[in-house]
Length: 505
Image (cartoon, rainbow, N blue to C red; front, side):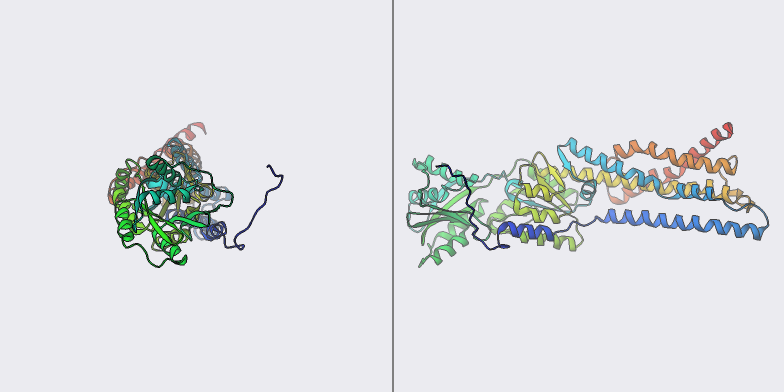
């Protein structure tokens, strides 16, 4: 029968549902500015204020000097504006958008969407990477491979109970249990009776199952299932349960304990499959100074086995959304830049807090909305490419900032002597470029300042190549190339423009 109405039944108090908890955690998360971003902002603001104060004070100072020296003319407002335009950090400020856009384009070519240039820049500073296990390190579809009975029960009894407990389970694990029971014992899945009640899995109970025919079938984590059967009146727990669970967990699989009412029947062995080639990627991340931490809801034994097989540096087992969020905040308070990859709704709070949040495209909508980078290929090792592009952007920005500041220093030798030469003829010794006149010197500096930005745009778009070398050697290399080069270029450029201006005037 088809009804023309939908009946909604609320089974939890407002504010106590899983969704309410996720919303509350996400609202409490806050993504911070990166150290490099803060440093650049402080530098640009400080330089702008310094040059503004210099320009404001040169006018009155020159007027006083004219009276004291009895010669020359005060610096005009036009020259002061030209001085401020040339000396203020306009070059790097104009190139920053081009650098960010270029980084986003390079990532898009790798099938990664960055929602902001800031996210890519933060990736260049990352030194801790948190990865969700299921769907990120492993393929995500855990497969039931074995029924292991305990307490004198048969494997067929276990398979039948596991099948019933999985009839309403639409996850890949639930379907694999049904498939294994059918293949191994010829059991045919049947639809749930009309009086059956489905028990959905939750992060709190860590159990799922079905109530039917007056019996309660459950499957879930070992400690949760043991607690459930004790509450149901179990007098004792099978002595070999712990050994079976530990053996499966140490092998890197997930033990799923199955019960019926107050009896534990056995354990389902769910095999996790590591994504191919992920160990090599983690090795590369480690060589770049990035620590990898696996986060999983599995028990510590399973987590340790998977972590060892995937070759991650550390792991957090039995993690709830609150635990993931807490771990990220602890790393950030210790001064680390944290990246997080995930695909589930329970990863959303941690993604919203992480400095770099990479969501898998195959993940849930909340995870994608909380992230600032989305991997269309859903490949967690893609973070290596993101980090390389981030480091390239940081190097490009640092190099162009060095070039811009060096430019400003060189422009002093063109503008300052021209401004004050009529008052202090002794400043003529600073005219090392032998510019034609004070007028042509200032005009040439302004023209050079306007031309250098479009000249540097191709470099900002292309970016400087990331070189995996020690920081000291990299600093010396960039200072020589962009620092010294930034001082030489204005001398050559302004002199060339001065010659052309002299010919035209």
